[in-house]
Length: 144
Ligand SMILES: [Cu+2]
Image (cartoon, rainbow, N blue to C red):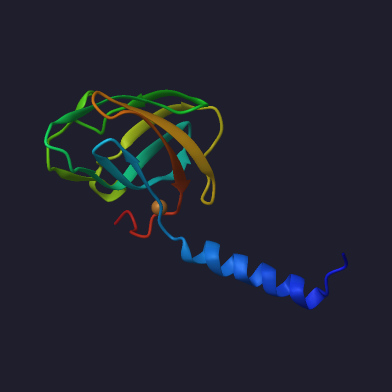
């Protein structure tokens, strides 16, 4: 029953190496590939939900109809766009914070801080619903 401290220490190290190596995460929904959903720390009650890449590998267009996040009043399309967002067949898009291309979160009940993770439910016309985990991280690129 009793395990030596040495064995416990080695097990913990192995776990740290595994999680430390998982620097990215991705999700699939139908023909859609969602790579690394992330958010930047919130400002006031506003935040943004970004994606390193979203690909439609299918042969038909899809559309993002709506997004919901617990504790967030409203999710809006990126600045200058409107839902539904078109995802043409074979297309690849990046919703990047440094390109003002992220979904906008309004009315946050609590702040998003670097290191937090939260779930978002994305609803697509063809691919259906996709629940993704969003990682809150400090942007690597500085504002200017
Ligand atoms: Cu990731």
